[in-house]
Length: 183
Image 1 (cartoon, one colour):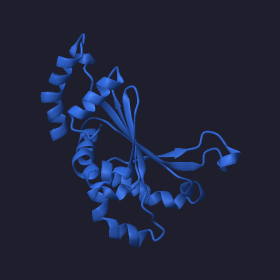
Image 2 (spheres, helix red, strand yellow; image 1 turned 45 degrees about the vertical axis):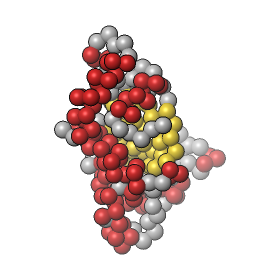
Image 3 (cartoon, one colour; image 1 turned 180 degrees about the vertical axis):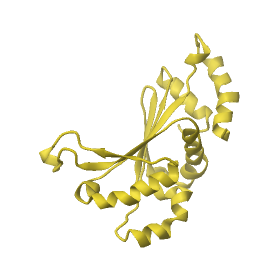
Image 4 (tube, one colour; image 1 turned 90 degrees about the horizontal axis):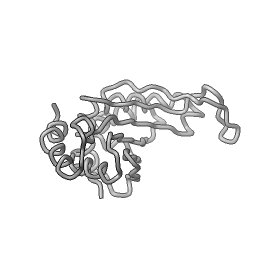
């Protein structure tokens, strides 16, 4: 059990129960899943440029990402049906909490404020990370990336934290409770 998960079960749930009227323990807000997504035009033009992104996602999350393909052709974007657009991985349970711990305690404190764009919706928190190399797994393998993939650029991703909360205020309280740096 990671520190974030243990903190949620011992402290955050108790605080949420004190502030919000729940009908049963099953309706208490919690983090359901985290979805990481990366898409870019460069991948559409050169599908080989997806390899370092797949490798980086697997290093950071501990789970193999799946490739995202286009469902329809869009001529304005020069996109064809079944063309590879990027990759995505969905984290749940143990992997989700370990990724959340890395994100909260190691990655976000090392980033500058302008490296993250945030958006809080009803029951989800979406933000973008401009430079994925702020994770220490990528930092340790930076030489490997540069040698193996000479055209490698730093890549970013969209992170979507989906909760079971019923309101935006409750989602904010949950994220603050698990020590996520949200204002």
